[in-house]
Length: 385
Image (tube, rainbow, N blue to C red; front, side):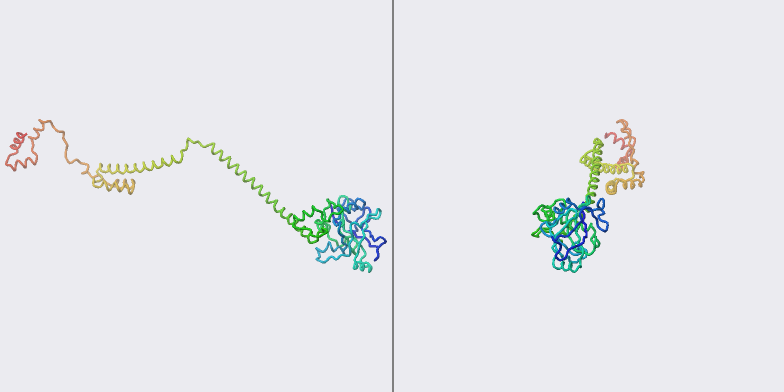
């Protein structure tokens, strides 16, 4: 894991600087800041040695361009305070040296304004910002430098913020080779995926582009965090749906296995039987009405002339209404009593005797009209036969 640190050392040069123009940026061997950093390295010490120097040469992102020296680390603080970050000078990664027993040296190129500040003793210290390996404490790359009057790291941004500030500018695990641009090809492709194209001839990523890249990455992280709970919900709902479908299939299968087809008939057969039943019921109702009217006639409850009326009443009002009507009728005795007595016809002799014995009213009327006695009429009747 890599982090950033800012370390301040004394500037001991005049306007003409030292003999070779170099100043010390880091001490040699194990060292730490006045505030007790680094707290995230085992042993609490940074380590400057030949191995660290080789890593800084290889991993520093600005290989072709110069590294900036500003005032009070304003390059790091400008996003926070919104103030401009004018340069005091620059130095190149090719102009750094490791001097065993002394440490890391750089060769700064200060501008006129910075030299005026230095000659007027307005600035006294040089502070180097570098990335380091939290496992070994060795510096890994150089970010920038600054002129400052505050020793140590007083007033610097938190290390986490400093690390985020340059995360889009460097790929520690892929050191650039000689002749490579500061932003390697792999990082360029990643930036293009985020909609950021490096247009600088030197391949330098601007501060605005770095900020845009970080914003795009933050947005992707936020979206990913929102998608994961949704995926979990989808998986859960899918499992529930499949379980419900399986239960329904099993229930349907069980239902199919328990159906006894001998206990059921096709719907077409059922409908045909129903129609027949309706027809038979209608016919039976008609027969029942006719039978009820006939029974009423035979029982002397109704007159023959009422038969058609009672049949229509039964058809219109139903059997219940007809039955209620007929039950209220009382039998008529005269309709059930025979008007004449039927006797068994006698034999011829008996018929003759009977005929002689009595005359009908008509015969008696005839005998009287003819002036004959009844006996004479009987005798004449007998002779006629």
